[in-house]
Length: 315
Image 1 (cartoon, helix red, strand yellow):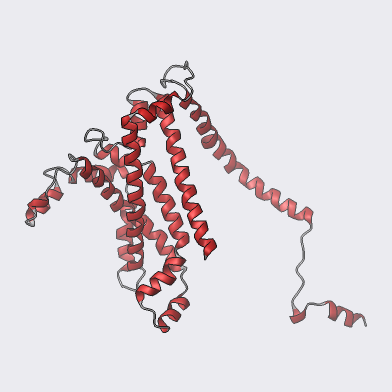
Image 2: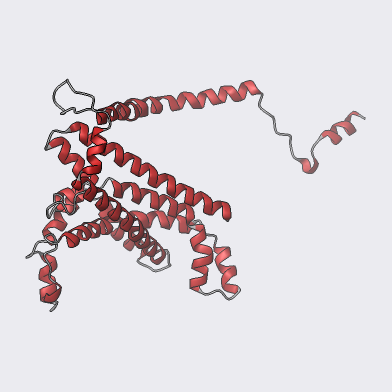
């Protein structure tokens, strides 16, 4: 009788019952997780969050960055920003460059990933070649491209050698050309970074789905549109966010290549922030610019995440 009861109490299929942890043991394991997180949390708050909040206070002052004395000016720095033509130009350049980079850099990274996800023999070498500019310091890349953009630099020289003298330009003397010359540098250097992200996403696309679609008569374009692209949405979300944030805070390439010129045509919020703080000594005004730049990056991130979540929900 006892053996029958024991047999009846045993789960079907010979599976063993899973021992449930008591609430006390679960709390103990949770506290261990919190304990391991505390050092990183202290470092994050002490070196980033708290100094950022304290620094944001200077956006409401006229602090010059040197003296210990400053006066509270309220929203005067933000009012000045609204009326400052240079700030308007810098804001336009920042947003325009960011939008273009988000579109072109993600498109270039996706195309490279799709091309190098095929079974060509040299795909490993080509991945290294396209990713290698990412590991070079942006300052070095910007200095190299500045030399290439010179009137007698390699670009114009090569165009003259192949009989395309009509395409030779003063690349850094024309406001519109200078702006998109900087975009070209960033696109050349960091498209390989997006390539790696999209390659990781392509590895998660099940081969069974692609084979089933091909057996049903779907061509490469339909397979890519209806199967590959929807599966790449998480990778696209990461790529869009990374490019948007890096585009909003672009500084190295602009400062090395054009210094905000010609005139003020290529100034961004970051270069304007640097100039106001370390050239003119207006740290209060520069901090206000930094606050606006932070809010703008937060806005881009929230909008992108909302769009991504809405698409996932609809799917």
